[in-house]
Image (cartoon, rainbow, N blue to C red; front, side, top):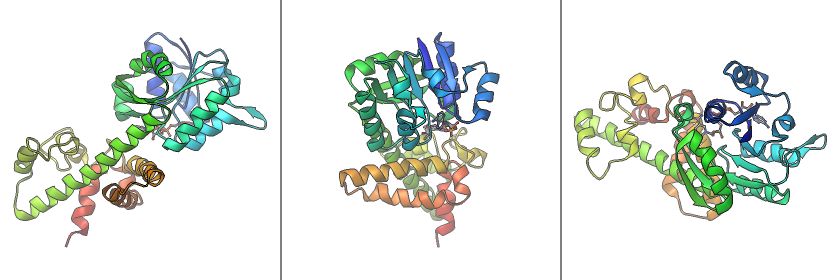
Length: 299
Ligand code: NAD
């Protein structure tokens, strides 16, 4: 398939390369010249204008930082035709950026009004997942558009779940990350309480990882060195999943909570805790580094 891939950053470039490896004809574009140069060096064909990438493409994939970037690029400006206008009618637009549910729905509406097909397809799995084509995709859109997107997503990931209509891929992503934030804090608090009671890290891990407190935050991302040798705690909290990205995703969770009026006290407390964490060095650390904040703020 002829694919335009826009947004060749940490995630986008390895994803575009995996599509190319799967045999697709991929043309890349990024507004940042350095990203285009890195893509060229990695063997991806790039062009200097978004509209040149999109012309003749059967699918357009975007992997940007924010919802505003997606909407602006779809819509274009007075002197620049947007992606939706530049593409042939009926082109499949796949947005894999992590953005607010509201923004995703607005992007779908713009696409529909322009006669284009669209899915929101945010990912989890990070840069390692993008490089190894092991991402998980959470997809929102019609059955037909999901069916058209699925084979492309399977070239970049291992798990592709159709979550429902427009915006529901983003809804699933935001719900997952709210659970993750709350559970990572809960695990860190428990380890600090255990430490102060004289409980060995390994003993607490052996119990909890096989008991009802078991969750990813302990079995994969254990916040103390030792029990899970691959967890970021063993390498001074180098990410992994950086505090800045968790903070971003919890900002989207906050928007979803405001939109729905849900009494999500735990999620919103986690949002506050990670906002403070990301103001300091936590921004560049794995989010499990919150354990050091808890130690530092304990009596
Ligand atoms: P990044 O900042 O490395 O890359 C985004 C790229 O998009 C940048 O190179 C930027 O120049 C480009 N861009 C912005 N507007 C553009 C436009 N109009 N046209 C072309 N290019 C444009 O970000 P990333 O780490 O690759 O993350 C991308 C998305 O994936 C984000 O929404 C992020 O929240 C999400 N995500 C990231 C991770 C991760 O571990 N990095 C994990 C899961 C999800």
